[in-house]
Image: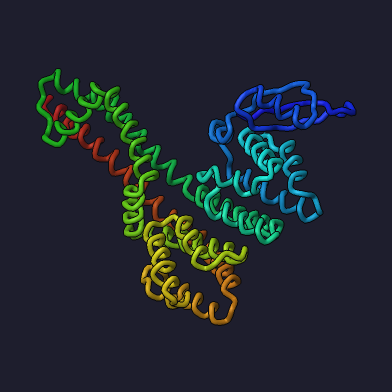
Amino acid sequence: MLYHYIASDKTGKVVEGDTDAVNLPQVLQFLSAKELRPVTITPLAQKGGGVKRIFGGITITDKVFLTKYLALMLRVGTDLLSAINILIGDFDNPAMRNFLLEVRENLTRGLPFHQAFAKYPTIFPATFVNLIKAAEASGSLQQTFEDLSISMNREAELRIRIRSALIYPIILLIAAFAVLVFLVTFALPKIAKVFTDSGINPPFFSRVVFGVGLFIGEHIVVISILFIGLLLGGVYFFTRTSVGRRIVDQVMSRIPVIKSVYREVAIQRMVSTMALLLKAGLPIIQTIEITADAVGSEEYRYALLRVAREGLAKGLTIGEAFRREVVFPKVVVNLIAISEKAGHLEEVLETLGEFYATSIDASIKSLVSVLEPLLIMGMGGIVVLIALSIIVPIYQLTTQF
């Protein structure tokens, strides 16, 4: 349990802080050892749970703010503990405040700075943690925080561009689904009932559509529950399991319109992460293994692991190891090989990252320009099919009269 205390020392000066303890007596024992007299002691959160229990958690914007201002404070000569204390007062996000309190507690106990970040791998990935760990060892925390701030800011901008480009297609998809649900759930059952009561035998296609509409209308609650359950289960399977991620990777890598954007995003992450880790001074094999977990594509992940473990570990150069993997674009492989010989690998990787970020933006715009008419045509096709299934029987009914 994390406790916040306000206490006074022998001179009457009031001090406050946080400490991790099993129970209240242990906090009192801690204060007594420091010759402090407790004024108030307040439990804050379970150790390691403060971040995860807060709804919303820590966003990428919080991480950009954290790295940017830590770099700024360290640059002007503020020590790390004082910088953390300042940030605790500035953050409004309860999850971030709880995390910073845990960081401060670790620092006061003499624990490594990166240890608090390593406890939350879903929030701070291995790339982030290893960069801070390397910077602690080399004394380059300021530069590392600046690099992390720039890198995460680019990542945030890329996410915003992707989301902005996909808003309109998503709205069209939701509208199409809503129209379909309305027609099948409300309109079709009523129209089907009219034909059933009148004794008219509609065409086969209309009977099929009416049958589906009546079935869905009668079991809408059960179908809705099953649909939501399958949707949540599918999201978990395809995002949280290795088999599911591999299936998604294979599908995304083969869809003609999407595969180019998917691969460009993976390459951009790969080169940017490698540049950041190499700049921090990490060994090349460790750099590539960490990059493999951050790249986001299962195909590229296994390729990078082979580069590290079956190529570099056996004495091959970086260029030779990358050339053995056909999944990487030739231009990337050639530039890596050339820059390795010239001794400018980090700079070339950074340039490649910027190039692919720009290319992704253009590719997404092209993708959206293709998806929009396809979605509109699909929505129109569904509505036309349902309309025909209704119009044909109506026409048949009027001709009988």
